[in-house]
Length: 563
Image (cartoon, rainbow, N blue to C red; front, side, top):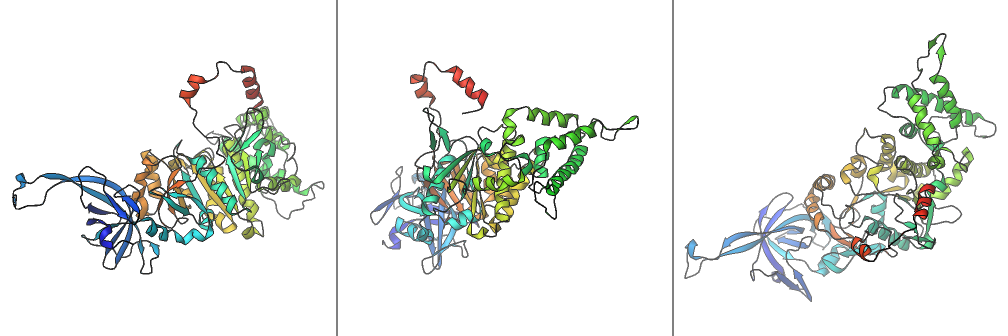
């Protein structure tokens, strides 16, 4: 190991609670300063690199978040003892440092800073060997996911217990590598933990797609994954809660919405109670609510609504006469649209007894047991997709909530495009769905249900959900509103690190939180196989692309809703 004196790269000139400023030692002007530690040449001042600040008992680790220059005058010489006009100006490099933790006397890294340095403290370069010691904490679990971006030879292991048990978020704009990161994490998870139970909500068919020959291609090994088309799975209307059904069938902005929701609630409760007392169902539950997951007849419910809509009291119109005109129009429109058949006209899930087989399918315990269940929502109509996605999430939570062995059977729910069904706005059309997912975020870890929130629009995702995430995997984000939102969510001491997000490459992320020993600029391993998320190459295809297409086949796929 080199002596501390040989690793000094600058001195602290300004101290604040969450940022330190250092003036770097100048060598050759205009050249990248480097320092050699062992056999390693380390560029000084690279954004995202680590430095150590030492002064007496103070031993702090910090990350470089900004490099700038200030004009200064050369030191006085015999020829120019004090004349400013005769001394040559030069550019002095200034580094902005964000403290992230301290090194204890036994060499262990601890988050947080208890004792700050004063101005004049030495700033030291940190080599791979020292950084490796800080990452030793989670090495024993073997959950390696990539390398430190500034030290490519240094492997990073995350703590899977903290990552999955305390929820995490993968945030980044389009093209930053979110699907790459999801695929890489899931592949590595199953390799290290083969009895994992992961449900992936795939809104765009990125993790399973058809080749030209009709065969299916997966972003995961065939042996560990089961692909389920949401329409084939059939997520029937009767499994929805009262709030979710209102989101689907009632327009909350209508004048008659209050009457519609009140009467709809009464009809729903009566329908579920009828099923419970039916001798064919043999349920015999002591108590039934509007949210009890048992079958009810949608046709019977509509018959009651129609009767109420045209009800007359003597020669006068009833109190709700005409209030359900739009309600009936909406539901009949959906019933006449075959795209909604999987939801409103189930053929397999048309009895209360079918719930068990459905739950087996989506937690990976069906006919083909699999660690990863990809539920493809790409063929589901856009307007109902958020409701279906949120319902799947709620069912995952309810499954383990009532599972007496939930501690032995933890489930991870990966929510792609989370902003579409976990919106920040409480007045959103999908407020009921949002509340269901927020319940998972707040209570899921108690019952072994982990949540992974994946989004390209962080500031549109429910703040309640993101605030419950213990780890943030932040890929490239250039939008100022999204950056500011992420900065408000992470610990205050790590907020300044968000400024590096705009310069990250594909698959490169700033990882903050409980699953990583210290805030890390991480390059994730490339997934193999890769998801179907690469950008279309306009240049190459506009040069060598097809000169004709089978339009009839496209029309057929469009009409049959088969991609």
